[in-house]
Length: 290
Image 1: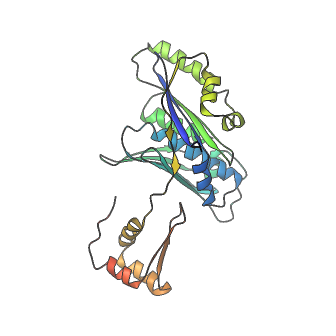
Image 2: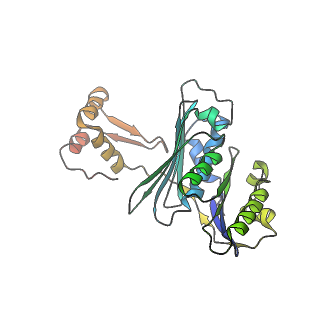
Image 3: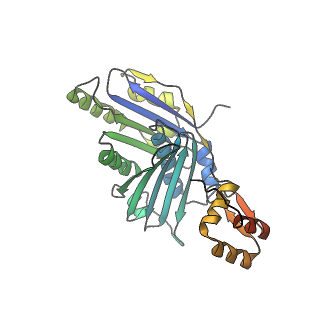
């Protein structure tokens, strides 16, 4: 079977504009299986998965890119990350009794911030923060690019509970065009991309979408990269987390329940530790993973 989850990069020949397109199905469904989400939240979670896939492709190194939004609205947490540019996972948390009825980002998350974290395998960690002021996730991310990289960047994000996807266009530093020529061409491409609708995008393959939008442009396509759902949790990471919590707190849970059970919120994998295993945690040096 063909992979249902792919990302493609592309360039507009002889210009200073690039792009990416992503479509997700299997990984999106795997994320939705791990939570009982209302339709509106399922759609938003699909958008953040598509966004993190698109943004991870801008990294020129191995590492983890994380998008995390926290607010005081019905949705208290929205988070997705992409490891090594191809392993996706995500989660949303709702406040008790919440019944979201708006698809506007501000109404769902309330006041808060969107945090973009880049954690390379080698090198320093980077974190950017942008307020949740735009009405959509794509708008907030465009604000982030405007503030941090100062490169014109547009995103179109879509999800319907079955498939999720998105398109990213970005103007590059001037090399092949004058500023006037690049800005004019950039505006032209954005007008074309603004004709995209969710129903059409999510029912069409990536090549057909690009052909419809940019059939009069000279587009160079790069090979598709496969994406998949994967969770980075492990027994070792869970052990290290328990050590970080501290011996007193862990032993209080052990005394109360007879076992210490930890369940991953992303994939629902359960890790259990008995008394002997807890004793072992605090009687030997454990190397903490970062």
